[in-house]
Image 1 (spheres, rainbow, N blue to C red):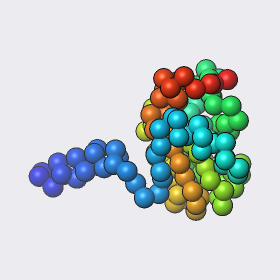
Image 2 (image 1 turned 120 degrees about the horizontal axis):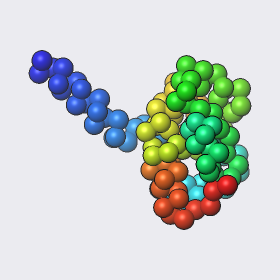
Image 3 (image 1 turned 180 degrees about the horizontal axis):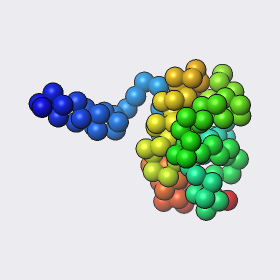
Image 4 (image 1 turned 90 degrees about the horizontal axis):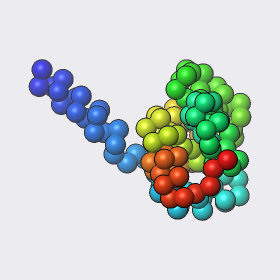
Length: 127
C-alpha cells in the first residue's frame, strides 16, 4: 500500500517536473523561438480547439483523439532532424505528445509553457 501511494505520487508530481527530452519555455521566449529558421510548429489540440484559434503557421495533429496514430501522423508531416515547437491548451497534452515524439526519434522538442492559454494571456496573436 505504501509503495503504491509513493508510486502514484511520483507519477503525479513527476509529470510536472522538467524533463530531459523537452525544453519548456514561456510565451515570450516561445514567440521568438518559432521565428527561427527550420522550426516546425505543432498544435496537438483537437480540430475544434484549433479552429477556435491557433498560432499562425501551426500544423495540427490531434493528440487526444488518436494517441496511437499521433506518432505516425507526426512522422508523415514533420522532419525528425528539425526542431519541433509544440503546444496544446494548457501544457499537459503537449508534454505527453513530446514524450512520444522523443521516443520516435525527434531530436529537438520545445513546448510552450502553459499552452495556448498562456500565449493568449501574453497577448500574442492567434488566427
